[in-house]
Length: 82
Image (tube, rainbow, N blue to C red; front, side, top):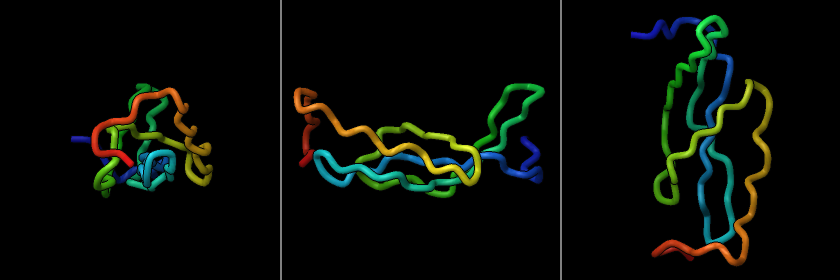
């Protein structure tokens, strides 16, 4: 089991879809990067309900993630998306 008592170095974000072309970042937990082994230990507190594609973005603490890219107009839309 990972030692989770060490300081967390990153914040975990997921993209939450809010419509066909609207997205926002949702903070879902924290992570710790171990430089000597190159391993990330993620501690997720929550996941978005609906519109979650499984992608998690780890940003150094205190740094906001980049704005989510808007979908191209020629990209297919999944079933049930509006």
